[in-house]
Every structure is written in C-alpha cells, then in structure tokens.
Image (cartoon, rainbow, N blue to C red; front, side):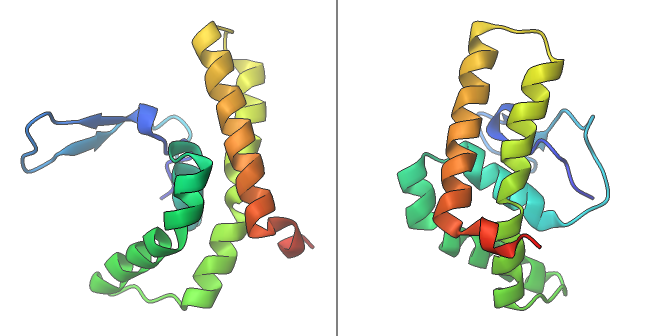
Length: 132
C-alpha cells in the first residue's frame, strides 16, 4: 500500500511522543504500488537539497533494514534503482496537484518548492538513465 502524498504536511506528530508518536493523514491518493515511491517522495519533498544529498543513501538503507527486520528482503542495488526511478513521483505530483486544487499563496509556494526539490533530486540521482 502506497500513500501517494507521503510528505510532512500529511503527518501529525504527538507533542509528547507516546505509543503512536506519528499519525499519517490524507489517504485520498492511496494505491497498491512500490513502497520506495513513498520513500522517494518523502525525502525529495521533506528535506532540503543539501540534507537530502547528505543523508538519502543512509535513510534508504535504514528503510531496507526495517523491511528486513519484518522479514522483507530487497537487494540494495535494486532498491536504490527503484528509489531513483520513483524520484519522478514527487515531480509529477507537484505538477498535477497544482493544476487541480484551488490556488493559494501557500499552495503556490509549496508546489514550487516540491517541483524544484524533486527536479534536483531527479538530476542528482541520474534518474533519467532509468527511463526506457
């Protein structure tokens, strides 16, 4: 199950932690798909370019470690290629969503930031090399 709009704006954080310190909301774009698309979307939208560049490999590796702890194995090289390919998901969402929602100054700023960050993510990762 893929959220489809997995970004910080769709997460509610409990101020004092607890058993469920984060709740994910806004499930209107849920679908069956590759979980790495949510990972690429989250890191591309949620981190500044320099932070993403610095930490994304480690964060993807951590994601794979958590999957492995739950009994799901995925070769690291395959996962990294899928992560790179799914960098397009955030760029796509920034364009499509900006055309179908009501315009606000905050929304315009958000979509511009998303398009810029995901565009840089695509270029940094050489994702175009994976298109066939």
